[in-house]
Picture 1 (cartoon, rainbow, N blue to C red):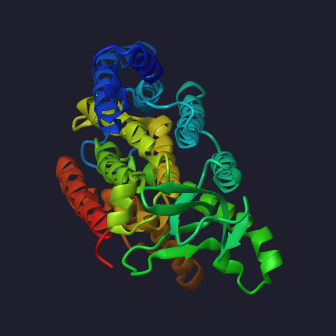
Picture 2: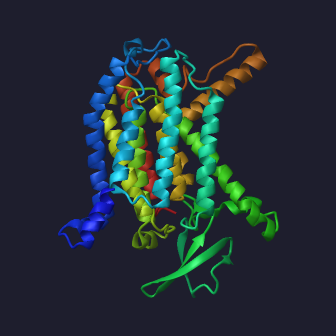
Picture 3: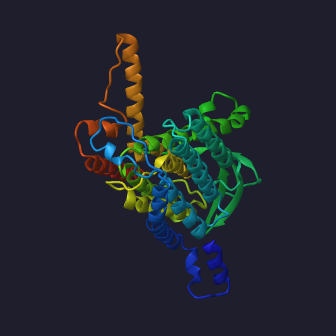
Length: 418
């Protein structure tokens, strides 16, 4: 909204109004706005939650200091959602397809998590929203995101070409070019594609259509959207649930997400900048630079929430926050075509999810084979394993953050290390 106000003032030649055109300026303002909302209004929201007696119900798992958290306000994810949505509405271009998708993701998964928390708190049902309904909600979002990215004419990559296109639509390899443009002495095609980036590979692009290469060309292009949408659904579901599992210690999910957010913001900036993308030899995706403003708000929301959520926590984000931040990370990575980096970048989420999968699978297998279930970890998710081993909660969180920073550096290094 403020973007359009400043843009209007710029047309009237008001001095200084032109600064709104710089993504870096708007990103900085989004961070500041997000921090103000989360740190100032966050305190009021926490007091409101306390008055409503919206406290976390704690299951006694025998963990040190666990029962001291009983009654701590939950549903603090509301602070995160407001701190992301409001700065984005103020500072981003709201006609940008990518920004629209990110706002839809934030509201959709935030609402899904809110319903889950509401059932737990007000209906006194510790199980909350049944898992199948969470999955259905994530799948629906995946369908919306996948189909939009595949069919929208605003979603393209820009590639160099030797000569201009001879038709409005023509197949170039596995892609379809929709238009041509000239920048300097170089001709470019705007191309519809299902290509994405493979880390650590020299010719680092993979096309989802290759999954159906056994079909003839006429048929495989008709099935390409199905493969892409299925991949989108799986990625969103996996990362969203991974973030949900990570939200078990004070500051763990918020701090890890802030680190991931900084990395994704850098990747979005270089992907949406023609000069940077050309230098790094990565896909140039027009208009994704605008996502830096959104991600700046996300980072500010995570840091601002940590003001109250760091050990000892004054508020928990609940599923309202954890489901949303995982989905945000997944959709953002898919948009900038860096989703295959997620196992590295979201390594903390991945380890937490994997620990649960291994624990449950091994327990069921050994119970079926030996009549007695056995465990790999003392407790899952992984952070509870270290708690059982006697590590202080704050130390576990700090060390997971350090691991997250290391993985973030590795993710950025993939831009040049191939």
